[in-house]
Image (tube, rainbow, N blue to C red; front, top):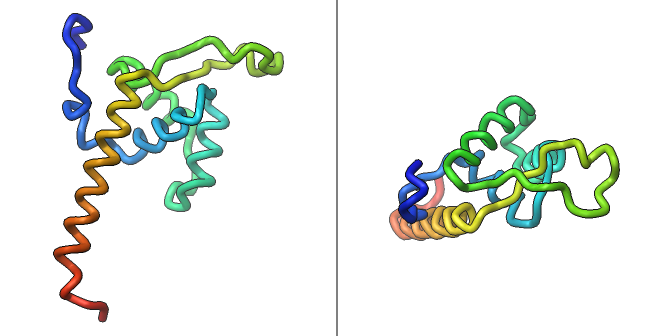
Length: 121
């Protein structure tokens, strides 16, 4: 990624659903892998089990694209959490999450309009 130019959030769309879930978890604050996994599994029943290797691969890719950053654990974090990799949403990551959410809302509104006359079977 060329860090000298500003990236438009729309360049990242459509976003993979798993990446959007990660961004939404991190929108609540910095976290390490286990709380991210737990939040995704609790929030979305379609994710039966999130494998740590898959999460960390996505986080690495998202970090390289500037959507998340590795940060120091919050001050006062328990000792066992201080050695874990903690991630936070970047400004670009927040903008991408907002753009993807708007894109999905527009898609759902369009779908409801198109399907409203069909009725259920």
